[in-house]
Amino acid sequence: MANVRVGFIGCGGIANGKHFPGMAQQEGVDMCAFCDLILERAEKAAKEYGTPDAKVYTDYHELLADPTIDAVHVLTPNVAHCEITVAALEAGKHVLCEKPMAATPADAKKMLEARDRTGKMLTIGYQYRHFPENQVAKKVVDSGALGDVYYAEATYLRRRGVPTWGVFTDKAKQGGGPLIDLGVHVIDLSRYLCGNPKPVTVFGATFSKLGARKNLKSVVLPWESTSDVKKKEYKFDVEDFVTAMIRFDNGLLVTAEASFSLNIEKDTGNVELLGTKAGLTLSPFVLHTECNDMLADTVIRANIGEGDFFRAEMENFVNAIEGIAPCKAPAEDGVELMRILDAIYESAETGKSVDIVR
Image (cartoon, rainbow, N blue to C red; front, side):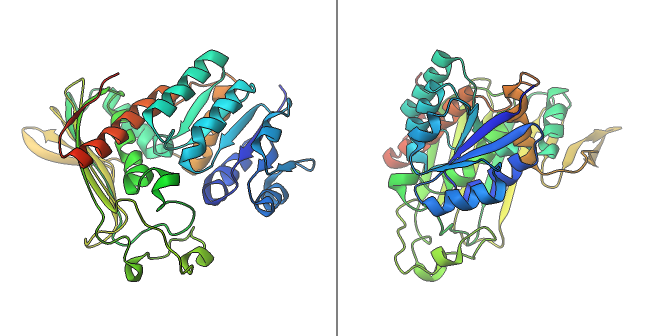
């Protein structure tokens, strides 16, 4: 079987931190095309990760016109996801689009329709689904060990963690703040572990109290650009904290919290599922149940082997293209997540709960 030839549209932080190293570990893959509005970024990526004949572009249309490219990664600001993804699908390419799927539910639906129309694969970058521990957790839930899972808590909180690189704090380009960047991961994971139920009603509230204060901009994260951090001009028009309650059609209730800046003791992230037979905490990985009529907590030490989840995510993309394995993060789930995110923001603006209408 010929190698899968892959192109990348967007060569910024998420590309260098996740997609390039993850895809470079795959066998049977040629990283053959790199596109970025800043030519030097594409050239650097091609030199470090590309095949000897890798091409570079500043116009994604030119990349998509290459008939030898089988698949592309869309790694641009969120507002551009829909336009580029639809164009890629219609050009006959399979697509891995970074999360969130789009800027609006309507755009996400356009992307799904393009997938159905072209017959190509579209997967969304919900990387937490691919964590080896979370794959074990999925098996635990699916086995019925928790019984009827009726409640979940999903948190992703940073004390001082505003990402000052890229466009994470620019609402016009990103669409939102920590809900879009962080909360989406744990909300998606909660839903994934519980069988992907459909959201019915949402209530949310957003706050912007600390993030825009320059003296509290950020504790520089390992993947941040120090040059970006030092910029004098700093646009922050997104929320810095969000909280929400989401009710699903199977009776599941999920509460979610996410922050860039919050006066808490330390950064924290977790998903906890509560069922009629047991509860499951992912960090640490513990099953809370009963044994001989006594309370019991079982620490799960899964034999998961080595390897990072970026590699696992890219491996699933390639295997799904080749028909070896099903896609773990299909476009349908991206559409449902966009409906949830949009409803949270609408609820926060109106102060009322929002019913999700399809």
